[in-house]
Length: 42
Image 1 (cartoon, helix red, strand yellow):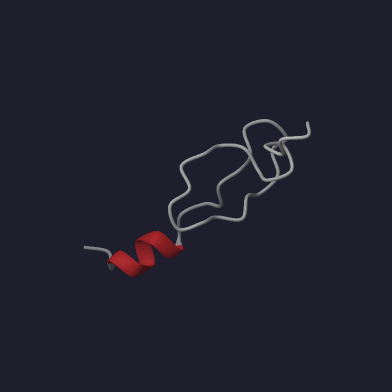
Image 2: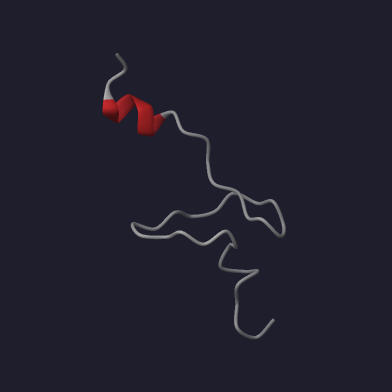
């Protein structure tokens, strides 16, 4: 059985659904848009 820490460490980076760039993950972030694409002025 794989160690839980290793499991989470090996997950691929989350990518923005709109532009495809890697997202900076937050503790409780379930969104699929990066900060740039989700900016309210856009």
